[in-house]
Image 1: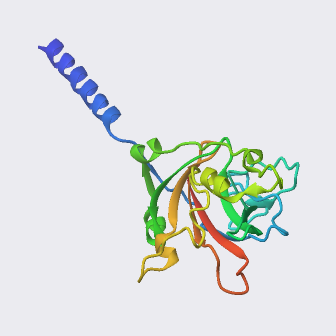
Image 2: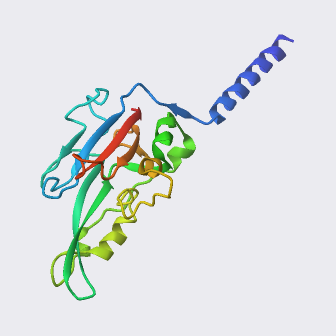
Image 3: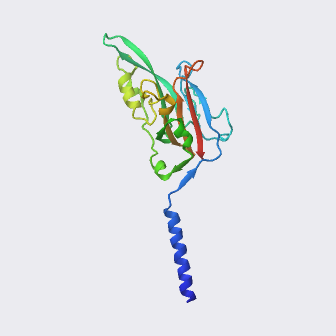
Length: 230
């Protein structure tokens, strides 16, 4: 009789263990500060891009110089997302050469991301991430800008460049003229909220809060992020 009872206990233990293994894993947000930064769009200021690094030795501080950096041509700063303005050129119907700035956000080759929702309320409410959310994470294609140069002028051709950028996870989707804000809604209600997985394996929620804030920050873009788990 004791042998039967022992076997029953073992079977119950195995069944309970299997149940736990089958339960979906949920990662809850740790004690990390919300961070907001105004990043320059002006290509004369932000020449090589502003690199954002979400997790580092001081990521739990409210503000630190390690959170982002304006890059130079040969910078080795290990960013997760880079924000900068590419100057694109096009011809008018009258064959006049014009230029247009194209603010973009690109993932580093070691970063993964996906869009999970929209708006500040969703960003605030996102305090747990599930296996289904994590399964949506993906890398993005590397853009070789030389492929989009006009052969005659050497300038970046606007339409083909935009087509390439639009294949990226964030790309230029946050900018005015591209982001659609329905009547009766604000920009902050429709800007995308992204889940990012860093090279370190950390999970972070990220969004553009305002593409073009009011003066005196009109030439900057306001971003915010918060680490969920390292």
